[in-house]
Image (cartoon, rainbow, N blue to C red; front, side, top):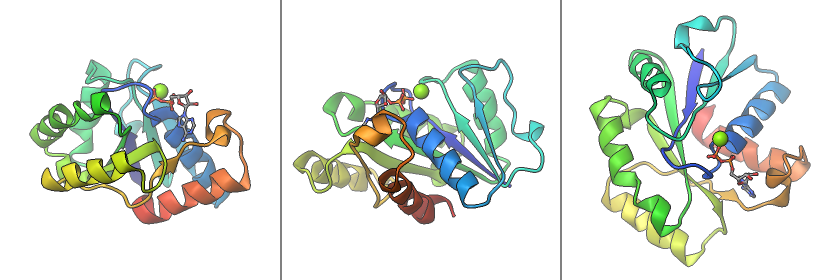
Amino acid sequence: MKHIIFLNTKGGCGKSTLCEFSARELARTGHAVSVDNTDQQVHVTLSEIDNADFCLYDTAGAFTGANMELLKEASSENTLIIVPLLTSKNDFKEVPFLTSKLTELNLIDRTKFVFTNVRANSKSLIERREQMKALNLEVAKWTMPTLEDFREQRDTSRTRNEISHFLSEIVL
Ligand SMILES: Nc1ncnc2c1ncn2[C@@H]1O[C@H](COP(=O)(O)OP(=O)(O)O)[C@@H](O)[C@H]1O
Ligand SMILES: [Mg+2]
């Protein structure tokens, strides 16, 4: 069983969208998937879920009590933290804080940053990649393109194709 937590203290960076599409694609390709949301449930623990190949967790955009509980458990489990990240200056400002928190929780080695809502090879993306490299942080090669199909939560060959690239690079 693998646990995947989508986390960022910023809202609007694609946590829910990436989580939702990933769950769908994993299920479509024959995996047993469970999805939880620390936004909606008082208690989300890693151990509650049985029989799933992948447990995905969408989270509220902060280090809330529920998120902290989940993250504390995550350190002793087979867990991956995915941090979707916009390339805007404002969102990037959050990276040092996020990094220090995840380091404190001993989770930085299990963390992958993924740039979302970007144009491949845009100037800001290239700049951000260099900054991430300087900070020694792991960033996925795959970036989530801005697509109306993502925005409208459409299950299309385009979104399936994108997400399957993401999954094979980072998750599978
Ligand atoms: N790759 C994308 N292309 C276009 N729109 C996107 C993309 N990813 C997210 N969105 C849109 O951006 C908004 C924020 O995404 P969401 O997944 O809800 O972020 P979060 O859960 O981090 O707050 C939503 O309206 C969503 O539909
Ligand atoms: Mg959300």
